[in-house]
Structure formats: C-alpha cells, structure tokens
Image (tube, rainbow over all chains, first blue to last red):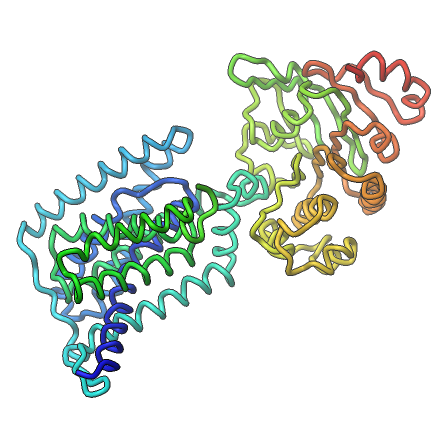
Amino acid sequence: MSNLAFLLTQLVNALSQAALLFFLGVGLTLIFGIMRIVNFAHGTLYMLGAFLGYSLLHHTGSFWAALLVAPVIVGLLGTLFELTILRQLYRRDAHAFLMVTFGLALITGEAVRLIWGSDALQVPPPPQLAGVVFMLDEPFPVYRLFLAGAGIVVALAIWQLLERTRLGLLIRATSQNPEMVHALGVDVNLVRSGVFGIGCGLAALGGVLAAPLVTAAHGMAATAVIDAFVIVIIGGMGSFLGSLIGALLVALVQVFGNYYLPDFALAFMYLLMLLVLVVRPGGLLGKEA
Amino acid sequence: MLSLKGLNTHYGASHILQGVDLEVQKGRIAAILGRNGVGKTTTVKTIMGLVPASGGSVGLDGQPITGLPPHRVARAGVAYVPEGRLIFPDLTVVENIRVAERTPAKSWPLSRLLALFPSLNERQRNKGTQLSGGEQQMLAIARALISDPKVLLLDEPSQGLAPLVVRELARIIHLLRDAGVTILLIEQNMKLAEAVADELHIMVKGRIVYSADPQRFRTEADQVRSRYLTV
C-alpha cells in the first residue's frame, strides 16, 4: 500500500468515525448550552437508537426507514422526558439533573435488555452501501464513505439551522441569557423541550448509523457517553463548532492510535483531553473555565 | 394603561415591595426615582413576571396580568429594557432585535428602528460585545420596540453613560413620547427624569411616597432631594 493511499484511507476512516462522534457530542453540547445540564442518558439513547434501528429494519425491511424513524421516536421520548420530569427541576441545583438523567440511563438500559435481550444484534448496512470502493487502488468500505458524507451533511444542516432559522436564533440567545429571552416574549420552556428532543434524536441517529459497524449492543452506551463527554470537554461545553472540532480530534487520535499503538489508543484520547484542559480549561471554544 | 394596585413582593424573608400603587395613563411617561435598594428594579421585575408578586395586582388596559409568566406578559404588550441592558453578547445587532420580533413588526419595523438609531444602522453586523455602553442601551430599546409594545419599561437607562449619551437618550425618549409610547422609567438621574417625564414618583422602602408633575417637582426639588433621595 502506498503511503498516500494509506493516509487517504485512514483519513476518510477517521472522518467516518468523527461523524458518529459528532452526532453524539453535538446533541450533548446543545443541551448543555441551553439548559446547563449534563445529560447522563446520552449514551443510552444512542444505544436505544441502534436497537430501535434493528427492529425498524426488520419490520419495514428498509434501513432508510429505520434511519429516519428511530431518531424521531427517541427525540419524542426525550421531549416527553423533558416535559414531564426535567421541567420540575429547573429551580433546583445541578445535582438533581445528574441524578435524574442517570436514572433515565439505568431505566432505558434495563428496558432495552427486557425488550431486545442481552445479545448483540446484527444490523446489515443497506445493499446499496454494502460493498467496497477503490481509493488510489485501495479497497475501502462504501458504508464508511457514506458515514463521512452523512456527518458533513448533518453538520452543515445543524449549522444552517443555528445561523439561519428562528429556532436557531432562539437557541443561541437562550444559551446566552434565558431569562432575557423569556422576558422578550419567547416561551423558553418550549425551546428547552425542543432542544432536548433534538439532542436525543441526534444521539439516536448516531446509534442507528453505528449499528452496521459495531452491531447493536449494550456495551455501546458506556463507550458512547464517555466519548461524548470527552468531545464536549475538548471542544468547550455548549459550543457547536467545538463539538465538531472535538469529534474530529478524538476520531483522528482513535484511528491513528489504533493503527500504531493499539494498546494505548484509549489513553491517547484522555491525554488529548488533559492537554487541552491544561492549555484552555474551558475547552478549545468554551467560555468559562 | 398600566396600573399597579397594592403590589407586594417578597425575596425570601425580606419584604421588598410593600403595597405599590401606580397608574400610568396611555401615552404618558412616568418616572420612579429613589435610592438604591428601595424596590425600583423589583417593581419592573414584578410587572414582567420575573419575580412573583406576593400580593396586589398588575393590570394592563384593564386586563389583569399578575402572575403570568414573563413571555405572556411580554405578549400582552409590555416590553422590557432591563438594568444593565442585557444585550446578547454573541448575537449581532440585528439578531438581538430579531429575537424579540415574534410577529412581523407593524409600528416599529427594523427599518424604522435603524433610522431612529443611526449608530446601530452602521453596526448591524457587529456583535453585542463590540458595542459601547450607549449603543448597547439604544439596542436594548430597539429590541423592546420591535414587539410594538403598549408599555415600555426602562430600568435605569442612563446608568454608566456619558453626559452626551444621556442627552441623546433624552432625545430618544421624547421621540417615543411623540410617537405615543407609554413609558415607565426607573431612574437615579434626577435631571433626566425631570426632563422627560410627565409625572415623577418617589419610592421609599417599597412604597410610592411622593408624586408630582415636573413643574411642582421643580419647585420642591430641594426638599424632595434631601428628604427622599440623598443618603
């Protein structure tokens, strides 16, 4: 394999990995930005997305239907959770949120075990994306190329949502001063429910997309929540661009670390986080330390 | 237009507003003066629903708005220019205004606001943090006006502004009066309040203790100042 071909395939590989990490991290950071809460259930909702994707694929026969419907279901569940439980807690301190979202993670995790069992479930990629393509004569899975593209498309879509739409404007304003937004006639609670739902839906989108690579398995929740936290801490809590940069950096470290020093690959991610925190305690694009 | 009847507010154990009575007629500018900590800001926050009233009522155009959440108070027609302006720091000038534009503005569309505040017009794409204190104050007023309010609450607009900018602020308030906007102005700057207001009220310990029109206020200014305003 030529050096150039190696570099190219590994870079695209990292980009596809970054896409999955970005779906996780961006939801977590949007929720934190608006609500100042850390959603401990984020990894579990990612896993729920994968299992829902499995069932939807089997019932409809279409990966694309699963890809569309699973995030919507998880997003609606997230909104329902915000409306019924989180809303009661806004006047309490942050520990209440931690406990409650951790509780949601435990309950959802057990529910998934009851419904789908304890075994990992195979989710094949759609037939159109099953093969390999050749990049500089090197074979590369089409599905990973698709993931990289999906990551770029979703990142652009969220960016446009934040910059160009009324909802995006309200999301940015609320993350800066919710009380003022409220006093300007905007029902801030609606913005919160919406963003919590969107964040949960994005995690599920990541889960469905990850399933063909790693199967739908219980273990993905724990890995996902840790990855998501690392990305958000590196990028800066509440920063959209930060979550994008964090996902790219973590993916590069994971992919190249796995290739050169697989035994230490996991440590590199934390070293990267440590390094960033030493230089910028609030994260690369974060506001406060 | 705006009527406060026996308004009471508590912060925990402290009794801040102790029965505020105030009527602001349509098209008038009412100013509340008073020392620090007598409840002036709490009055506007209670009107906005940002602080819960523990007794009494707030009415707008005869409709009770007591106990409504802030967004409902705003939608009923009350616009809020808070103490310290509270501009969104990372939004541009235009974006700051757009946050408050819930429906297309009729009386005060963006074009009219930018004509009224030329300095904002020149800095449309600047972020909130890049504005001077005076520009931030004008932006906070523009942001409040775009919702076509029935009543404008101005909390200490002159705070921290240079005399020249305070004069510009007075000019703007006069313009708003000419346009028929009803205003409740909270001020420590007696000169500004006297120059723009149709009626002056003085608050001491959570109550309005003195009310006068500017003519009478001017003749009694010395006694009023030594009795209610100097520390």
